[in-house]
Image (cartoon, rainbow, N blue to C red; front, side, top):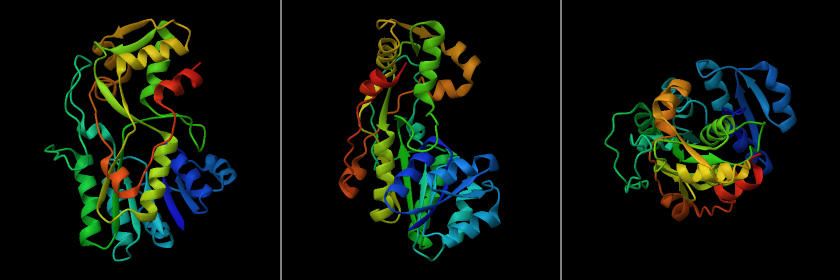
Length: 296
């Protein structure tokens, strides 16, 4: 198949592109930066220079492709509506990438939530990413687009595409290096599910090949408390497991509200549908192992 991928120069998008190429598919890769086209060509991706606001360009390449994988900007409604319109009536797949932060709380690092979410857990929250997820799934029922939503948890591992990093773990590592100890916010009791980038890329492949229309998949293969992540990082960096608390106020002042809602929340999900409907079997090394052998 020939697949259009947005966010192809990013961590998830580039890794999915590499997995698709390795599986024998062809990839159009949307990028705003013309300077990156040679890097993409070296990967085997055909660059498409433009942005998510280029409705005509997105429409053209979506219609000439056998499907679309959207990994850039989970809250960009115009792009999603453009893809649905372009693919309407074709039965082609549209895989939209969301984020498991949609189930997060506001623990501020102070406690571990007992609640876990799977794909059937109702979400009574008025959030734009949730509305966009529903838009994609409804297109799978009402507009003959094979709409699929994938919701990754904390992603870790070395990028399969261009040299890029994820968000959460690198921020912990960077701050830990600055202060000479593993770092967490508040008491570090909050927990996030996680998934290796290789396993996540495999999930996109499986979804592209056989996911039913209007399907919805969490992606996870374990979970950790942030205080434990800080200890793993500390050990890997040679700080002998020493950890310290980073106040929420200081974290927000440095990183913005992003720190509060990605480093200090609970986000515990279970990938029931991916395993049962697609036969997804995560095989990547654990986050503890990856930190031990890759963080320096």
